[in-house]
Image (cartoon, rainbow, N blue to C red; front, side, top):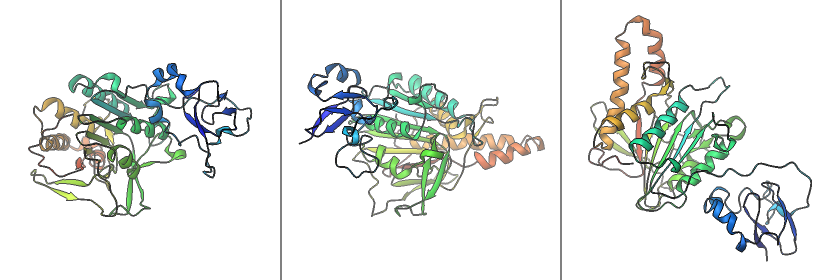
Length: 379
């Protein structure tokens, strides 16, 4: 019977056939005898990484052969010289605590579609969470492409691991926040769970080579595991982000503030939580676009319309309900648009850009319908 052995380099647990005495970890390249580091005596490594290791490098994932044709990991294959590989990305943020957040700000440096305000958005959102809403700084995972540490860049791999970290060990009473400022997209829906035939997706900085992160995966990773008593708030400042979490209900509100909940559930697919609550504020609808601009700040500093309006409302409005928050966000955008239109023809070009990018009003979706004017907004 195969036995479990913990790699001394990356701390991944490996399945090793009984006859094998020497192994090479396929993840980090560490070579060791199977008796060199018994799992039971590895107290130092356990104390160092704790429970996070099994989350970020789940057993059976990343250690098996790419072909998927073997019943055992490829790590016990013939030993071959190879260049050292980096250790797996391990979140530097504690998994403990009642409040936890994952913040992603993507500028796409060097690309024709680069953004100027996303990292600023991420920093402002972190400030709001820490200084105004009581989130511990060491319980916030920050992924931005201006960081030198490759493990803290918003690549597809790091974002996937960050989402798993966000919900790991989630318990009743926990409050989680998932924030993304960057590019969103749509692609053809292949499993037929979308009413409009398209999946929505977030674009990591390496999406051109590694691919997008679609709504199905986001829902499965951070929505489905939520236990009863836990809540998740997602703030997504990106194009095509209306149903990016695939939540069951969309709030449709008119300009007078009247609203209805639209049931988006597909009886063939379970997209709900495990009893917890999930909410998502999105910059625009699935078929709409948004972009960053400096018209809200009045300076050369760019910001996303959704992020700026959200932060302003949370800071300035006491005892917010979800309804008041949504209206405050929309009013901020409308006021800026109206003010610009009054400034004459010199603003014509700016107005055109604004109307294409920020005129779209933010959306609210939820895992269940509720009275948005009675339920308080609490993070």
